[in-house]
Amino acid sequence: MNERLSSKATCAPVTITEDVYARLRADILSGALFPGEKLKVADLCRRYDVGASPLREALSRLSSENLTDKTENRGFRVASISEAQYREVFELRCLLEADALQKSIRNGARDWEDRLTVAFFRLDRVPVGAPDWEELHRTFHVELLSEAGSILLLRYIEELYDQAVRYRNLSRAISDDKRDVRGEHKAVFEAAIARDMDAATAALMGHYQHTLQGLRSDS
Amino acid sequence: MNERLSSKATCAPVTITEDVYARLRADILSGALFPGEKLKVADLCRRYDVGASPLREALSRLSSENLTDKTENRGFRVASISEAQYREVFELRCLLEADALQKSIRNGARDWEDRLTVAFFRLDRVPVGAPDWEELHRTFHVELLSEAGSILLLRYIEELYDQAVRYRNLSRAISDDKRDVRGEHKAVFEAAIARDMDAATAALMGHYQHTLQGLRSDS
DNA sequence: AGGATTATTTTTATCGATAAAAAGTACTCA
DNA sequence: TGAGTACTTTTTATCGATAAAAATAATCCT
Image 1 (cartoon, each protein chain N blue to C red):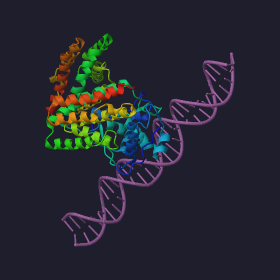
Image 2 (image 1 turned 30 degrees about the vertical axis):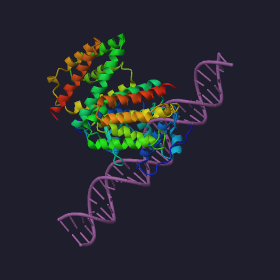
Image 3 (image 1 turned 45 degrees about the horizontal axis):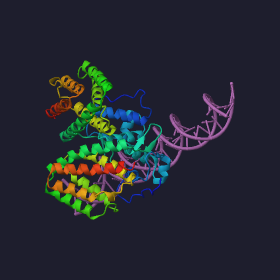
Image 4 (image 1 turned 135 degrees about the vertical axis):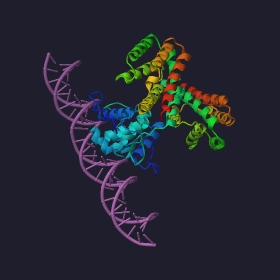
């Protein structure tokens, strides 16, 4: 474990389980906890300063999101990674987001355009890698698909987004500067606003394709 | 709660959590536990004869599969149902299974054909509604998509299959006899073996479309 | 009477302790 | 020496008890 673990939450989640769940999740996504690393309950209890019950519950929940692996009678580990698995995430993301994007473009009204525009320009203003870039980036993608009209679809998409964030953080070698990430977002944004489904879908898929290539080059 | 709850497991799952998880899940899918019904830990502890910790863990896991709803500080309920939600399940199933079916047909080799054939004829032999029909039906659908080459994709498909089973069980009014369910399976099977992607996909989508119509007519 | 406030009961979330299982270690005997 | 067996230690899964929170009932005051 090389990096600092997440600090105690300030207030938001009322319950301890929620709190430790969020912190564990953040530490796995950020790469502070390594793939395959053993997650001993006793250790984590001390480290996060909580009891065993909420901790187990959190780990259990993370397992169903594919962020930890659980094996009967031998506890939890941080989920392992592989290029094959990343490919699955990528392909499924393309399939689901292409569908969601088309629906969102079809359903989205004026206020959707407004929200998307705000999200885009907020994101566009900060450089890739800035402290709040991660959050703004997520918001842009969420807004983009927000009018898809299927909670279930969006739930899966979010889960896959998390996986993608994790892979991105784990392979820092991807020199983001070699990519025109901002330009890619701009293309998606403009096509969406123009209601050009094919162009929007192509732009979004291209965006992910580039991420995949970045990953493959260094793993 | 009208029907009998699942009986204690005989042996399969080693751990209590797994065991009670499976039993709760079965009771929700079968409709023995009603949508929206409050799930009090103390009650369930007595009913399933287990402690609170494994029970909470099981409920927690069911929540991430959308079979129970969890609200902070006010416990669990059986997940509610709605036609809108069923539509989401249906649409997502079409999207994911169409993709998986095409991949499975592309990748499946001789032994896939063999397994699928066995599964089909076993299913074909028993009448709809027979005691082991449910299990054979699931197996047929699993085998059909088994060569899709994406664990993640299949995981989501299975989750959605469960949702569909639940909706089917909750709306018994669908007179299965009015539908030619066996014929529908036959069409899917034959098109898959013939490697006719378009026909196979169309047949499978039609299969689900019929289920959807059955549901709408009585809810 | 009726709306707000305070007590009481129920229910949830959490802790600390412990039995059961796995992993690790030392020992035996060919 | 080294495969197998008995003994420790570590770790997991589970229980029973309890504090905190929500729901419910009782009381008060205008």
